[in-house]
Image (cartoon, rainbow, N blue to C red):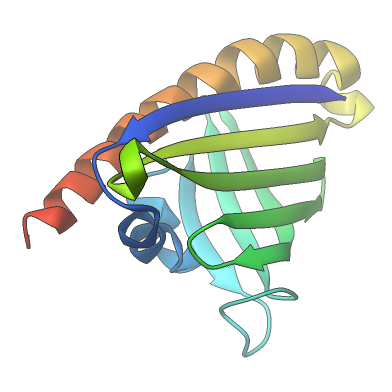
Length: 152
């Protein structure tokens, strides 16, 4: 299992950051590796929401099946990866500077199938490649949060 964690500080309150990350279908706006998100069923928010995320990392393309396992508005969102790649992930929003800013942390524990390289893929692909992609994703999130704060 590969544990990947990245974090950033955002110049907005946790509530304002949640307004950006709460719409799961909009994650494609700031996640470069997420090409599309399709909900499975009518539910699009909260614990139990299921969706398929078409993911691209270099030449590798797969559809990641996920279920939201935790939903605390302004605080946390957790998912279970239940497709080809399995494991769990979690976003946390921690107030800093008296709640005017947010520390956003993205942590995942992922297990890759043997045919994708198994533990080696987790070490190399997860800890090195995915962490770099997710740091760029957090830069994109920072830009969107800043734009939202300016009323753009």
